[in-house]
Amino acid sequence: MQFSVGDKVVHPQYGPGQIAGVVWRELVDGARCYYVIDIPGEALTLHVPVLKAEELGMRPAMPLSMLRQVLSTLRSKPCRLPDDAKERQGQVGADIRTGEVLPLARVVRDLTWHRQRAHLTKRDSDLLKQGEQRLAAEMALVSGDAASDSIKLIGSTMTAALATVSG
Image 1 (cartoon, rainbow, N blue to C red):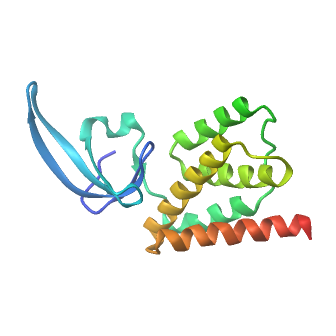
Image 2: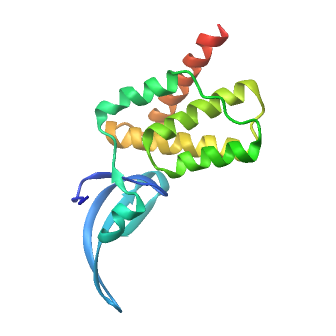
Image 3: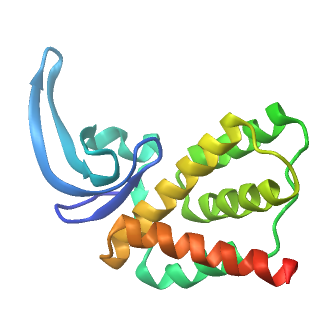
């Protein structure tokens, strides 16, 4: 898939950003073309080889219309996570590494619910925070809102979802 300047994209390792430019770099083995991607959530600028973008799993950011599905996923019935911490963290980490928005929403939902019934380890808490930040960053990128507003929306959505069971 080819991207253009201004396209909103998601790098699976670094999160959502926007193509700020396309540059050629002269290397020892020849010239290569790179996407220059601003990743605001990480205060980072990436140079991704154009020919490697698809192989790396870079994808277009979700369409704004998908935001409703993300919020619905957050409100939906959670999947029970494994009680074994290593198994749970392996599963959650794999979902985060996909860089896909719906697995991120499921991670946030499932770890938030897991926290209600059992203790989260430090690593679980870190994974939950990473999932929330990545999800909020993509939501903010496509909606034009601040990431902090997206974090609040995720939090209020999860609070409401938990209240339906608790109340």
